Image (cartoon, rainbow, N blue to C red; front, side, top):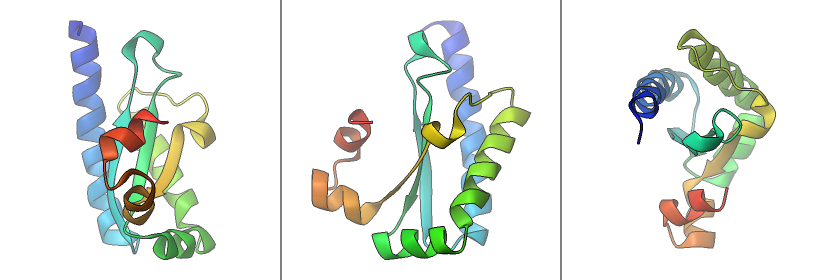
Amino acid sequence: MKKSDKKLEKTLRETLTDVCDIALESVPGFCWVTHKVDFSRYPESLKVVAVFDDESLLTLARNAHEDQFLKSLITEKLAQAGVKLNKPTQQIIFDSEEACEEVCGGDWNLRLSRL
């Protein structure tokens, strides 16, 4: 990994930690956020995944437009850190612990590799 990749990775981790802290306080059912990036194809390859506890809570969040709030929060915080999402609607994904358990047996590495 190049020095610039390490710096970007650190920025992504710190920024998404901030997003997570805010979302945990304000979005019911939200659990955590992660990302996946192929540095050789950055920024197009950057995917941010917001994870909810289960599908019913994710549906409630969507019905209350909390998904839009999270997309805006993620996009805004990343932009403030100098990371621009070219296609936020495709690069920000919502998922649930429940769906991962059902499809991948709870293996998030496998689930994220399928993005």
